[in-house]
Image (cartoon, rainbow, N blue to C red):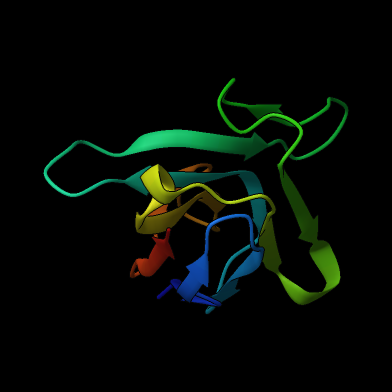
Length: 121
């Protein structure tokens, strides 16, 4: 059983910073692509950033380029999203999403439990 546990959310003032973490646990072979999604109240989740297993640069939504940074620590099976210069409209629930390989399935999609971030004006 694979589980993703997120941490690092909370309340921050506009212009401030937060770092989200997403730790994978359980039995698996490898973690492939990792993405961070933001869901604003009443809206569908949108992809803010994605990092690939190897060989290419991360991709970012235009709205967060230059302010958000996605990284991964393979030794800790943990992904991070550093969020700087936060805006009030970036309030929402943030989810990590990972494609994880096991002995049975090459790529299975997993989601974190979600982490609420409030950006105050």
